[in-house]
Image (cartoon, rainbow, N blue to C red):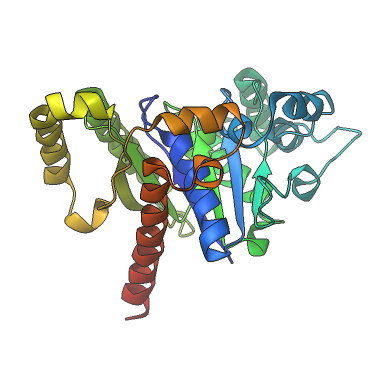
Length: 306
């Protein structure tokens, strides 16, 4: 059974998608791991980092995106019931082990979900227990979507949207671990603090559910522009120290990802930078990160077995 891992931060613009796509590509290319990327952000950045826009347009026209599976979970009266397996795109960037479950610019309608769950609460004589029905839906939505394929992968990496919507909560509830990408800046620090509070509340809301196994694997610093980093190095180090005060050393990745113009160029080509320019500074950092990522997972497994 593969690991399910969410990359998440309450703040946007911290390099979450860049981390997701390139970590996945490194694991697939350098370590021959079978990896599925699932795009849960309506900005579809992960999808467009791996697929040209015209290919995504065709998929969306034929409703071959994650939104079809979400609608299917909410409304079971669809005529064309595509499965999770039907929607997975592979190979990507000529890597047979790298796969994608595409996102969508319209992922779900929260009103329809609320209406359907309210009706479900009435039908099960739990009209006064709507919160429990909602929590159960939240916990099982992505678990059920991934259940048919999770055994086929070493890693399923969920690229979550900024903020804390139902898909982010469902992703965390379905995950074994989450990774926090962060820039060494004040608002990124706030995003980490807010997320940790949300995760605590998520655990409390599912405290009767023994299947919630979520752990923080670590925080990854994605640095600001290298030219600015030298000028503001003291400030950035100050912010990093504040973050490190709140977390034990094993929860901070040693590898930091530098800003690199090749990342933007790679996105334009819909190919991960680690594939299109493997000798760039960002690519080399991502390959080191992938090695550290696997070491952290091995360490967690050793502690469990011990």
